[in-house]
Length: 332
Image 1 (tube, rainbow, N blue to C red):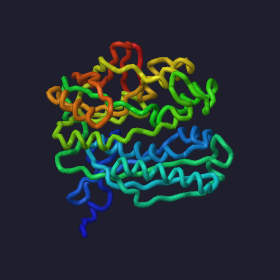
Image 2: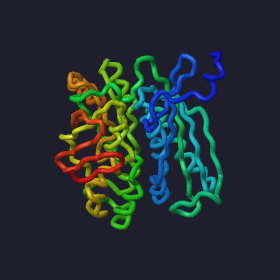
Image 3: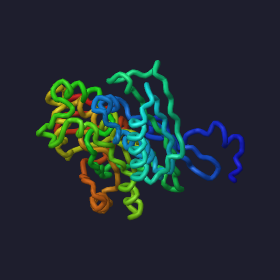
């Protein structure tokens, strides 16, 4: 059994700065990464569609993907479900999703908590309100801590495809789409019903990042593209910004939100992943090898830009005339 000194057992500070995707603490000889996240208002779509089989995957994905960004190998998770009423079928569907997410991520879900708090939670459908949150833990091996301090001007940013909205921007997506389409309606541009599109589960990127590690690809930074969109790549310690000069065309669901919600592209870029769920920054010399490894795992991946010297850590998208600083994009 590992013996810990009192200063190690209590009050251990994070070894990465505030604002990274996960905290990293040293406990004895181990670096442990910790993160927590939920599924958000995507749960309202699940309630309206009466489908809960994918949101457990989202819960796992939102947590383990954040662990990857600090160089951690995800190990275990806990879940917390707060409900308005105890429905065994809803619990069963969520449980199946959690199990599938854990399988994809290679983690164990070692416990959790269910709270019946009908006075506190209200949702889109009476009696079906719920919240789903997870907490994940991972191990950072010696020499694998990622805080972005290794990023240098000229490094290549590789975008890895998302599986739709993942678990962000659903308040805006619902406003734009649910007045226009029924959830069970087949939408030609999507090639599916709206419910199928909006309930696509978050891609779990653990196997893809592990493949890069197994092949010895040098990784300088990883960003999970969630809320704040591509502005998430600014979470690096190095004094660099990013020029994103070759972004792929956003998938159809984002184009529909932009059109029917009359949403400016600057807001779209700051809210949604727009088709890129993970951004991996590597030395330019590793670019082709990283792309080959990622594509061999079955995902689409593109070189989308490069790092530039910029102490303000701005993100520029020249083709759209946008520059991002802090949490917003604006016209340059």
